[in-house]
Each structure stands twice: as C-alpha cells, then as structure tokens.
Length: 223
Image (cartoon, rainbow, N blue to C red; front, side, top):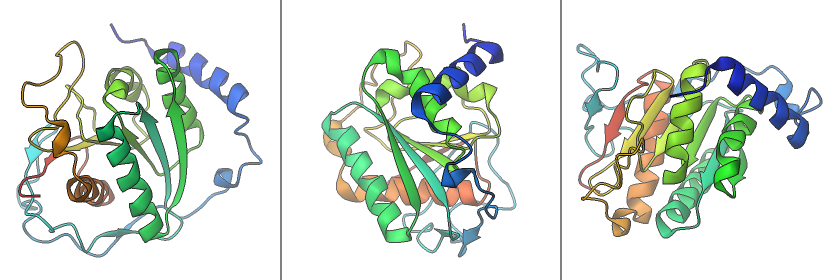
C-alpha cells in the first residue's frame, strides 16, 4: 500500500534539512518554462491518434534526433546501483547533458534506506525533469510519483507498472524491469545496455517529455 501525501511531505521536509537546498540555491530563481527546440519526426508518434495513458509506442529510430531542450533546462539525475547497466545509463545522461548544455545535478541513493529520501531530495531541487537510472529506484518511484504530479520524471532502462501522467519511461527488449514484486523479466539482458542504446533512450525520452507525450512507455527497437 502506497503512503499518502502527508507521509511523503514529511520526508520532503527532512530531506530539505539534510541537503541544504534552500532559497539561496540558484535553481530557486524563476526561469522560462522549458520548450522543445526542433520538431519530432513524423514517425515518432501518430499525432492524429495520440497514445492513451500507460500506452507503449515504438517510434522510428532517429525520429527524435532533431528535438533539443531550450536554454537553461534543469535536470536532476537520480541514480542507484553500481551495476554495469546503471553505469551505462548514467554515462548516457551525463554525455547528453554535456552535449546539450543542460544544467544537471546528480543525486545518488547509496542504500535502500536512501531510496525514497533521495527521490524527495531530487524533487526539492525543483528541476524541469528528474531522470532516473537503476532498477532499485522503481518501487520508490511508484510510491512517490503519484503524490507529486507536477514533477516530470523520465525513467530510462526500466518502467513503472502503473505510471501516472508525470512519469515517462524508455526501455527496449532486454530492459523492461517493472518492480512491484514482479521480479526480473525473463528477457532481461544486461548486455543490451549498449552505449548507443542508452544514448538513444535518453534522447528519445527527453524528446517525448518536451512534446508532452508523457505517462507512456517509449520502446526502442533496432539500436
């Protein structure tokens, strides 16, 4: 049973005290609403028939490549785990942020006791987007995200079993962990987390979020 808002709010207050993130933080200053710079290719999604909540779309490879975030886009990378797939995803996010000139901060959850407080810590930074890497974060995200619908999340290399409209996921055959006691998929393949696939996942996911195609799963093929 997921905790209600007062429980998560209490965690947020505790996280604010421990992280020192306050009104003097540069990110606390107003900045323009993020927008997409560039246009999705016509084979990313059928705009005449947009995907329903929790739907899965399979865009044509590269149909997201012309989409970039606007200036001063603020991202928190939230990560847990030191396994090879997670490290590959973290590198992909960092490389993308560097290429795009994105303002990025990283929150690392070091142990199970840190998972939910780390999600809260990331939200307290008030980023435009929280990008998550690591299967250990899936259940904590399922607990927290329904109570904070104004904060966009992007999950790369996994998905939530029942995402709300603020959670978008990107996965592919070999990467579809969903948590909630469902166990690891029989098709999970750590070797599928290649540099090219992880890079594509980040760019496709951000392109979806910037175009308000959220609360869905973007499934990659052919990378």
